[in-house]
Length: 154
Image 1 (cartoon, one colour):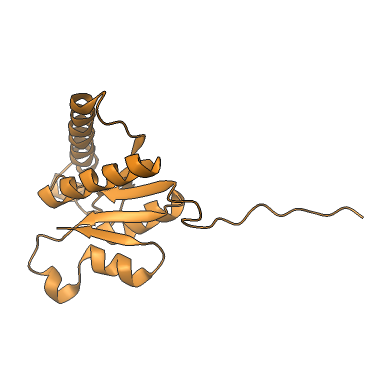
Image 2: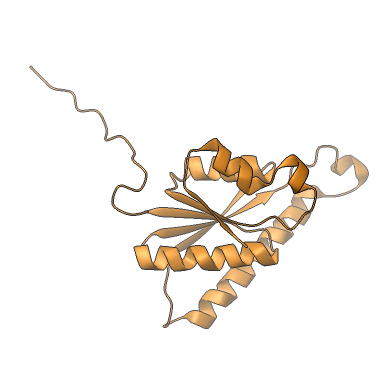
């Protein structure tokens, strides 16, 4: 009788994190989150997945705004800053990293990234917007989802 082996089930954090997702948007708090996540990834020999979520703006093109060009420009600037930082630290600090771009709202994009990349942890910067105290920040929504350990960096 042939036994069919099912593929191993993904388990988060069984032998330490393998993938750490950090949200970056160019804000000071997101850069601090990325630096913190890079330190975690280096110490754990994990992959650092830096994720930028392009905002979805329906009707933006109708207003004369080439949304995809603006978003691509922001992503390119972020990658250039990341590469410059990696180059400055070459030889003293090494970490495996990837840059990913997702579309949508920040919470939805980060959640999709964490799911698709099978993240063991998510690191985000604290919200710098006062309105998030009323509606809820991306960090709070990620924590409430309860799917990954979430670290919020001030």
